[in-house]
Length: 351
Image 1: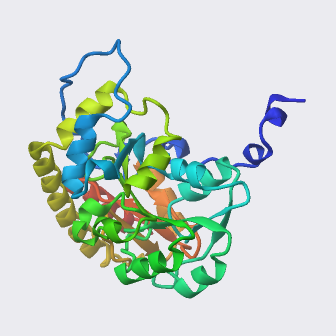
Image 2: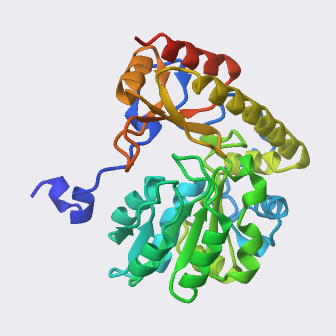
């Protein structure tokens, strides 16, 4: 028996998440992972590396709670938002339970479910990328966790708040509803954090990877009622955040760090509007979908040709052609003005 055959059968069949870095590419313009284009600068203030870190770093928990408008009892810190996805599945799903998600959406919900050996149900988004509540309710039997991304990746739109509230009402006492708010800093008024007090089965995923420009830090959060947090604390690793990570995260959440983040958001929103306006004028572009995030989903007349042409020039975008109902679509992270101009020039030059 080979080593691969010794692994669990679901792992043998698993296709790992195709992250931007795993897909590779050789470029000087990286607009495929929804990262902020420029790195912030931080100096370490804590250099105590011989001791294990705090299980949940108090400075980070308290600062993020204040920023998010919740109690520290409502916050769990994890290694990026991705760890939160898997923690929730591991903590709440029995072997015969199901996870539900609504494609086209973030791929880690499916990968994490498969990794944990949990079956999943999918209810595709409607033509305008909203929840199909009738079909969700129809498929809800046996579902223990429902994942919804808002703003949705890769489409960029917000899920209607009224639909999220309807979903919470129909799942009360039956399932955990997870709203992934990785991109909420670009539309903070849309957060579901204000609904936590009314829905004990709501969990919200957050991250420092996007607007905070700290994707390399791998620091994420779960916001939820204290009972949910207590359950997740049973299954999270004992020391999830290294000392340098919690040190920088705590600095980023201080007033000066928050002000810098908000400036980055304002600049990016201006660049997004400018990029969208110019894309809409290009003959190869069929549609630029409305976005509330730091990227644009663009449908081209020949999406594969555009993606490959820019890839060959070292401009790395994210191909969405194989995603459900996204034929000829490419997702473009909003870069610096100079990067965006290069993208526009390269697309315009395609014959």
